[in-house]
Structure formats: C-alpha cells, structure tokens
Length: 463
Image 1 (cartoon, helix red, strand yellow):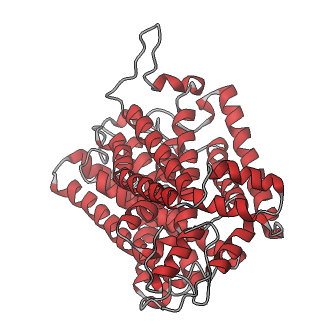
Image 2: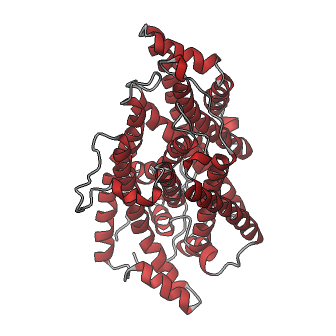
Image 3: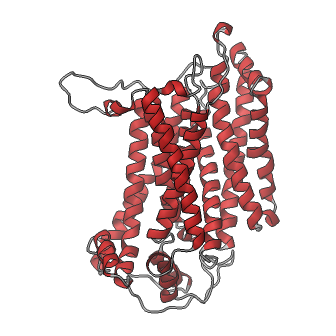
C-alpha cells in the first residue's frame, strides 16, 4: 500500500450493519477525512466551542495560580477528610482514559473491525484525560514544585521515595500508561500524516506533516515494520488497561478505612473505568459525526456497539455495588455495617441514591434496541453515566472518610469555589485539547478505513 492507493469501491455489506457506509473509495475516504485538517475552512462552531473551552482553561490557570500562592488550604479538605475533590477527580479522569486503550489495543488484538472509526479520537481522549488526571495528585501534594521527589533520581541527600506508598504506585502506573498510550497513538498517526504531507496545499503544512511522518514513504519495508511495532504496542498496552486502575484502586483497598478495605475494588474499579470511558467516547463521537458530517464513517453500528459495552460494564458495576452491601452485612463488622448505612442514609445519602439512579437504573434502558438506535437517547445516556460515575467516586472517597472509627473525629466535607473551579477548569482543558486535535490531525484513521474496504470486499490486504 502507498500513501495514494488506487480507487476501490466498497460493495459488501456487513450483516450487523456497515462499518463504513457503502459507496466510498480510497480517494473519497482520504479526501473527506483529510480535508478537515488541510483544506476545509475552520467552521464557526469550532471557533465558538474552542473559545468557550479556552475561557474555562483560564479559570483553571487562575485556580492553580491561587493554589500555588496560598496552598491547599483554599480547598475544602480538612480533618478527617484529607482527600477531597482532588482525589475524586483524579480517579474519575483516569477512568475516562481507559476506553481509548481498550478500543485501540484489545479490540485490535480481537480483530474487531468496528473499532476503526473511533480508535483515533478515543486514543487522543485517553491522552487528554490522563493529562487532566495527572494534575490532581501533583496539586494535592501541598508542595507541587517538588513533585520530582516522587521519582527515584540520584541525589546527594540520599532521599528516596517510599515504595510502600500508594502515591508512588500511582506515579509509576499513570506515567507508564500515559507514555505507552502516547507512543501507541503517535505510531498509528504516521501513515495518515504522510498522506496529509503529500496532499497539503501550503508548503508550511507539508513541512510540518513531513517532520511528523518521520520519513514515511509507504514502502513494503515500512508497512512490515509498522505492523510489527503496532501489534507489539497493542500487546503491551492491553495489560495496562487492567493494571492502571487496579493500582489506583489499591490507594483505597490497602487501607483499613471502612468501605475501602475490600478485595472487590480492583475489578470493580476497572469495570467502572471502562463504563465511564465508553460513555465519554459516545459524548465526543456524536457531536463529532454531526458537526463534521462523518455519519458515513461513525455509523449507527459503532454507536450501538458502544451502548452494548456500556450496558455490559454497567452490569458489572451493579454487581460491585451489590457485593459492597453483601460484604458489609455478611462480615458482621460493626464498622463496615455502619459505613454502609451511613453511605445510604447519612448526610451524603442523596448522592448515593443519585449514583444508583444514574449508573444502574437509567442505563437499563439500553436493553431496548430502540434506545440504542436513538442518537439523542445515547448522548443523554452518556452524560448520565459520566455524572453517575463522578458521583460514585465522590461517595467512595467522602463517605468513608467523614465518619470512620472515632465519633470524636467525625466531620463534613464542603467543596470551596476553588475546588469547583479546578474541576471545571480541567473539563475546559480536556475540551480545548480535543478541539485542537480535531482541527490539526485526522480524527479518524484514514489508512485503516481504506484497509477495511479491501477486507469487506474480500481482497487480501498486502502491505
């Protein structure tokens, strides 16, 4: 395959629905997706959305600047709730980043063709979510300017990190996850930026894409090495889907705090991460296909499959909730039993009721094919699930801390405006980064879509 392959029409339909709409050729795929980056004028909706997101990013920078000036006392954290919005949002953002790696790596190894239209922007979503997540532990340190002390770098003072600290585990797990995800995403981009290099009308764009393409010419040797590297990275990234959020769950599970000290947390957290990650993928995919007229590539089959994955992982999350209740009652531990009663009927009881409604009850509508086939319903469902998963993290962190073993140490947690501004600011950062990505790089993998045409037409793809 070269960067400008011959035209081939898609004539075979998938029995479960097309992965790409019929009638597209190599040329039309490259032109339609590549035009968004190299020839299409920046649409008005992009300027409006990116402008709003940039204003919210300024809110984040203001909150961080004030935090550096005054310290973490500006947040609502206190004794005994030393973990507040920072850890809640850290776990939530890490969870959102899971769908990109799952779609790219695991579905690639399982040879699921429907991943092709969504894997590129899902991988980008992973990178931006990990960047948002990484902010919170650093800001939560109290002295974020010396965050590098967490790494075992050589120093004359003989200062080494504490290997028994879950904070250190998070540093290595999240940094490894982010690094592998970045390399995996960039390797997948190389053939497409080479196509943009060859088609860009302006010389400066040719040079920029030429640098990013790393000398790619589409030769057989290039394709051979590319496919080996891509497959190896997929195999390397697959265990990270399980390991990263498992390590994050150990932040809670290795403690003796009632409600945290449980073996169900690792699989429960991983399922919840995939649940919220696919919800965010739907939240991004539906406007993307609408505003850039990509309905031929992000078809109803993709949206329905993501709805099915949400339904399956949502049932696992529901099982986790039921096991938490079962452990509390079956253990005969008075502290665990009090924790669960306080979680459901205490001061934060309404939040627990909302998370059950958003994460368990409303998503049961996905059993209906009519709901899975309705784009507005899927979009609303994705927002509901993301809200519910944030509430889950809030309930896990706050309700276990605010009333633990000693009534004399009980307290309440109330987020301040700086907590809220920091959280909303990361939403703006995530949105602004995604707007830039869609405008500057192909949001859908062009070469994989072209390969898909050959596969569906019954032709052997030889690179």
